Image (cartoon, rainbow over all chains, first blue to last red; front, side, top):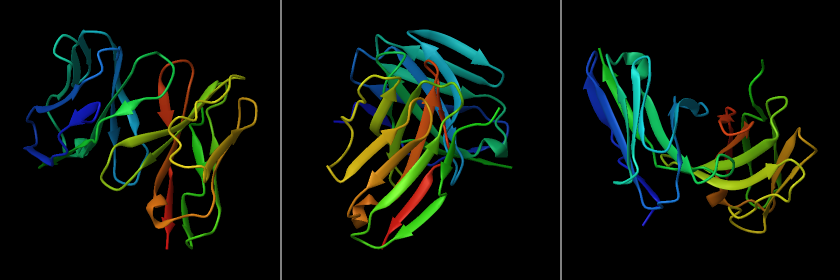
Length: 111
Length: 111
């Protein structure tokens, strides 16, 4: 069993819809949670960073962490075709050190 | 300022040859990471450098893989006697302290 599970998709939504992404994990020691966006043939770009449980909002993006359920989510409101990309969740146990990644979810926003 | 840069962007080599991949981190970042991303998959940790501490080599898949870092600057990942299963995108990230920022990657193809 992988430490971090993420549905690879693809997830297709119409422009303007809410995109809902999630990851589950097995290691209860994870404390730092990130979401990266990766366009085709590009490096991952950091979108959101949260520590421990709770919600964090940044513009159209909301990240949620539920440590009791070992479940994290990313919501994208008012989705745009430019949001079409692969979204990777990542986490680690310390603020330094290696990240454990999910497999990534491919999102397609259709005009 | 400038982000993480990697060279070459693409590398095609023949099975059995050695390759060197280079990473220039963001200036002032003390930590540097190498990851591997196989087609359609998430990132797989390879090695991590933090200041003058001994590197965390726990993700290196075999002794054909090695990496060096000069102080808090450039790093080189070397793969000896390449195999077809080494074909992947090799990504470098740097951080100071917690947020990891990625370069564009080197796409390695082993024929």
